[in-house]
Length: 175
Ligand code: NI
Image 1 (cartoon, rainbow, N blue to C red):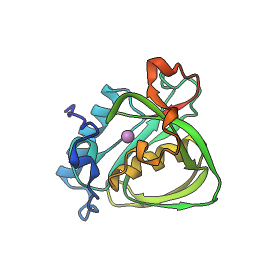
Image 2: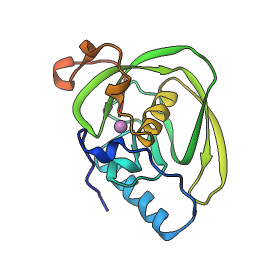
Image 3: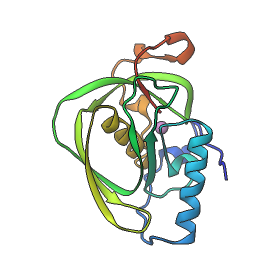
């Protein structure tokens, strides 16, 4: 079922979400199905459970030749539960991001360039992966939602924040 995505200003987006303790349950499967349908419907690159009002540490992301991000590298579709991020460098890079909870806007956000992420799939199987660049950016953006952080809170220069159709960006944007 396509769910309503909460928009910035809703206090539910500011909560620290709870870890998932039971895997492979009908409730968790239904949540993932709703998240995927909602993300696909809105053509997003990722979605976190708090964005549909569920305070659990669950994110999904994936980019497959998305027409909105013609220069974006493909990111495999991933379900990530109870994620843990480990930076593999102190180096950051700036990149344009958007968010389904902040519709119509884009901002330039610094993110760690390279990291390892670990977590569980829906069945409770642990996995880990290394990511760089756009992939690493998407993971950081989505996992921030689990701690109540929206990308404008990460920005250092609010002059680089504006409406997508005014900014006329040709750079990659994460959602
Ligand atoms: Ni977002």
